[in-house]
Length: 282
Ligand code: PAF
Image 1 (cartoon, protein in one colour):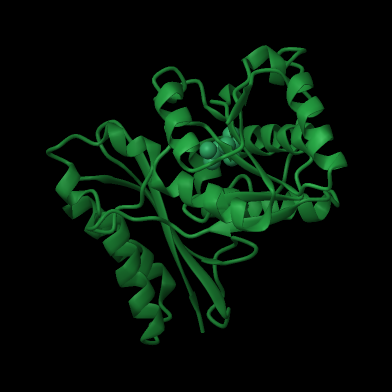
Image 2 (spheres, protein in one colour):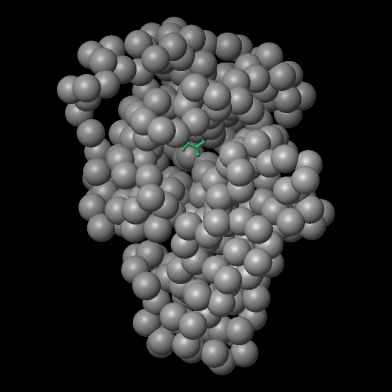
């Protein structure tokens, strides 16, 4: 596996691969890789000849009071995992490489309407940071396809919308949520869950599963379902941020006759903010 820290050297290598007719796939990550990331690499490998995994903890998508400084950075272990998975290239740039003119006056990419709801409501500017850095990564790597996890459902929907709106020549593919045995969605932030909290941390998943089942059984009182799910999370000892029953494409609150619905939720443990989602078709 080749490691690149600079845009130029990565692009030179990719130009050679492209001239040999190789199809290039990108898996953007912030590192601290676990099984769910490796599953995304495997999906990219199934479609492409050369897979680039980027590892960059993007400060632009973190709020001032968020966990950018303590976000787990485990580059050596990440490289070992990528090597074991036969990933071809890892791109691990310094901040100045991605933001050569600094961040304050950085040109931004914004997907209005979808970026200010759900996680965007409690993390203002977060998705602007995500779409800006993902656009940069798309421009740097120029992949045929890029793979993102369904665990970050809102992020995936926003990136799909950005690609559509800007006619970006990249296919976005998704990888299913990978879960621990009790249902907790795998996430780098799970390392912030304490041993005491851990047995209860799957309550977010359980509450969303209960809402999904109620809708499947014909319950259309979405407001009551959202409230009851939040109460379950509170009873488990956590602070719910939101539980929302949404149209799977627009992420607006679902209408009673919407056919494709996603139930999204977020909750706070003592030190982590966890998110999850479950979809259903009617
Ligand atoms: O999902 C993530 O890890 C990040 O939001 C991403 C897509 C790599 C952008 O920094």
